[in-house]
Amino acid sequence: MEEKKTILIVEDDKYIIHFLSVSLKEEDYAFQVARSVKEAVSLFYANRPDLVILDLGLPDGDGMDVIRSIREIAAAPVIVVSARLEEEDKIRALDAGADDYVTKPFYMGELLARIRAALRKQENRPPEKPSSFKSEDLFVDYENRRVEAGGKEIHLTPIEYRILLLLIANRGKVLTHHYILKEIWGCAEGVEPGTLRVFMATIRRKIEENPSEPKHIITEVGVGYRFR
Image 1 (cartoon, rainbow, N blue to C red):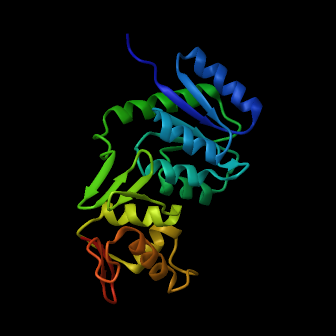
Image 2 (cartoon, rainbow, N blue to C red; image 1 turned 90 degrees about the horizontal axis):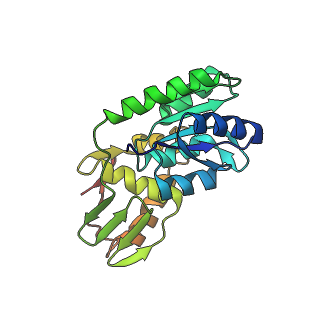
């Protein structure tokens, strides 16, 4: 017997939650509900659903943060269902990693068709990236967002963690200051020039055995940084 596809509903409107829940149950999908950014990220990391239906306006933040957190570890389809009609919002969501964008109010039949299409496309995608990374004394557990250095678990802030993952994903390549700022903050303009340097220094203090002679994150003077 084929296992049911699981869908994570990220929505804080109880009427839409009820509408989606009834419709998905009728189509024989399993589902879970998250009503905030924090709950959505926690449920996704814990259960790895096959698809996410996401509202952007959540009580504790922006749904864009949910997309970025999902894309750090998984390629599961994300369908945004939002009342935001501006083209700029649609572009930002798609650029952040959403697969589709549906505006409210919506027809359930159309949304179900988009869900089926997204799941078919997902089946043809290449395998997702590994669940962990290891380089000498540095270990990163992507699924649990856990980092170890020298055999000890360390704490990285969300931005520090994203910078480290960006460097690891491009290991061996020199990433310019502008590229890193754009990928992490969304744009390079308006960010203080020394901001990135401060973050890199902090990350090195946490993951390097000798921060003054780093063996993981290498500075390319005047250009940027490289993960060895």
